[in-house]
Image (cartoon, rainbow, N blue to C red; front, side, top):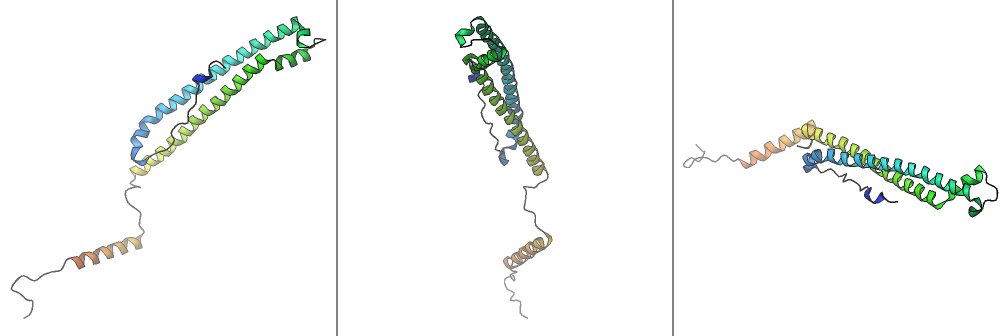
Length: 171
């Protein structure tokens, strides 16, 4: 497990704030690139580990063939050879490394997928802002008429016509 420390997958910030849409739009491509690049690097390391697994397995198999009694084998058969190779600690160590890297690869791919969902949500939020969705609440016709009637009534009660001085309004 020599190179795994450089492949730490952190969860991307997936929260969208309405007042920071432009920042999200600017930051999103960089985040997607970061996780796609990380997934690619992990895939390359998995391939290297698989090659190393083949090499280690062949080395262990050669040692078992040379000295089968050291590995507790009385009669060397392909089945016995395969069992010893699969159970050898060097082979198991490389297999564990591959398993851990595959897990990290899955996390990186999930981060890319989550950022893709975030992109879709961000696109929808921007579209809503363009249409004025957040500008004011939508009121049905009856509600609008009630608000206009209330505003008219309120304005009339505030504006009282005063007669000019000297006139009482009586004849």
